Length: 170
Image (cartoon, one colour):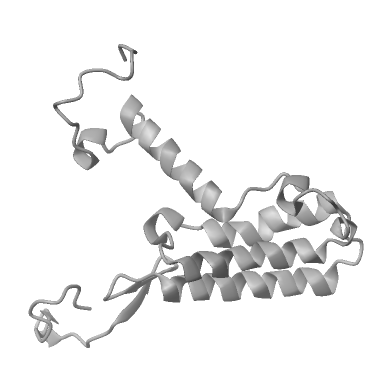
């Protein structure tokens, strides 16, 4: 796979064998494309999550709220969040596609019909985008405090003109 726009016609070889060109490759369950877009990964994750929701829908008859939330968290959401820091969706259509899984799940719970409160709040669930943002902030905090292998200075450049932190020393 050639990544980038320059010299796209190069032929790659390994140990004398010419490698076949590809525009899509799957590595550790994450689909990588030559254009860097994550739409194919989002579609694959969506299809997998919908299949699992269909299996839950066909097999579980007693749909008590707490049972369904545990099933969703343990069987579905892990697919929606697997390696999401590597392929985080940045197009609105991809984010909406993944959020649709959560909406389909909420419609499966019978005792949520006719509720005045927002369904996600009733189930104590966050949107997938909120969970991704939270995970990103946790990773930056770990880098800042020195708990991660990667230093924060390797990713971010501090502005030399800023002397303080809004009245705080650290």
